[in-house]
Image 1 (cartoon, one colour):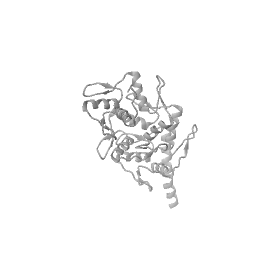
Image 2 (cartoon, helix red, strand yellow):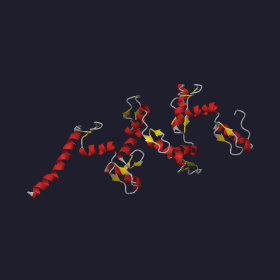
Image 3 (cartoon, rainbow, N blue to C red):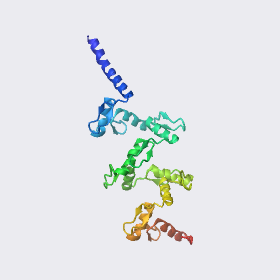
Image 4 (cartoon, rainbow, N blue to C red):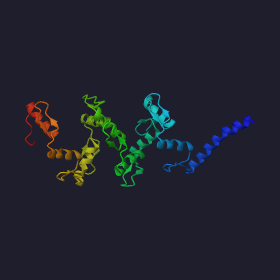
Length: 286
């Protein structure tokens, strides 16, 4: 009898898992989150999901003490320490530490963008990019700086911002040894050495080193000038031009010559001035 009871107890979870698997194959998701009404086919998935509401993170990395919400997430995280990347792209052979990262990467080869914004219909190749994009419509900024309380819509933007407080520049160019605040700036800087311009205008085929420069350039074709001066209402196609213009109202001169301490309201004016110390006359066109 004891043996039979043990067998029944062992068989029950297997039967339960089999039933859940059949429901999932059929598309059935009978388990609903009481907080957000999201549905699940497995009790374990519901349990893990609930931790996104409670903030519970019971699994801790023994290397860096980072806490995670599931054992699966912990296994994936551990690969950042071991360097393991078991998922390889069959097109370019790039390797990834998670299958979902490989799936997302494959779409860069196929051009597939299955996630569409319901507000502006812009499409994305992964759900994460769509979630971040939606914040541009909702205005949500869930990441707050603990120093100055400035808020950001994305975690990496907060990390970049924090370096303005610490002055940290951990990324060094291997060519000229210039140090930069983040990996994005380093990649962009390296293109000044390689000459690479991967962002091309679809209208005139002009190429650019940065996607932000391409976006600003595209406005020269559309005539769009979304940045308006609050003093004189003059409009500009890029934010940096507006900031430069605004100094004509404030008389702010943040750029100082290190030789004679003369101040300028624009970096280009300072560069031009520095040539007078180097004994090089600036071109008449300047």
